[in-house]
Length: 211
Length: 224
Image 1 (tube, rainbow over the protein chains, first blue to last red):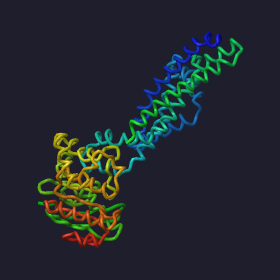
Image 2: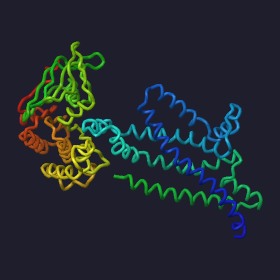
Image 3: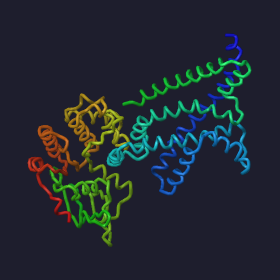
């Protein structure tokens, strides 16, 4: 128990970094992914093609490698990031690509007849999209978005490669200092607690968007 | 009163589906458009409802034009604002109804007139309740379309289209998913709407239905 008390401050410190990164990424990437999906579906072919290449690269290479390229590689091209902004930038471009594909699937799942009904009734494209199409898209994509959000909590642990002290790294340091596995158990419990709360929140959102 | 389509042509991938076709529909008429699958019946209805563009010809309802034939014979479409005036004179009930699943029955009905600011929300609700009552489906007004049967959904779709007071109301295969009794119910409802002065255009395979409820029939053989 003494050990738990001793390691708690450093673990909470790590958790703070983990959660800060998590919230920034969720808030930025979900709208950004939706925007990219709309562009891919509705923009001219050549723009859609560029987006496909971007998504291919982001999904086709490990996130860990992308972090290394951004932080260690881009300075050679004259672009230098601080550690945390480098992590934010990499996670944003990576996760936005996944969300874009999820939202694209959602948009394509809405029958063409819905768009035609909006047109025939003179509802207007923007209002129709906002009031009629987006709610249908949300209902379809929420389970997959939830998956990605939960994955994100755990993926944040990859930023150790940039020397940032997040939760898992804090646990690792504690485990080494005290020659004990208890910190790893504690870290696992904290991850479960965080993902548990997020799961409950996602359930609430899912109920709200149901019809 | 009524809709006129003059000298209409439409081709897909160099195949002429409709060529130099003239069509008119007067208030109170029930015109059935019959013919084999793939002969362009639904395409013609979609042209009238702006879901396809005519290559040639003129389409108008009274003084509101959708497109005019120019000197070189091409159909020239009017401005967006003018098209809206036209489109509110014509309504369409889709084959699969296309109700908005995330809106209640009442919300489905009031969405278009309130979006277009044609009436206040209170006026729209009042009118929707009146129409849903006439369609005998008022009891379902707060439910979502997914909980309704096909026949009930169709009645909501009719009410939704009637909200904009169209002079012309189009039905794409209204009886394709209905049993004979329900189809007869819809036929009578359509007759009531026509009796109030609305011109009805029905695309159908159902010859029996067309003969029983149509006042005039047009074959898609006359498209070419």
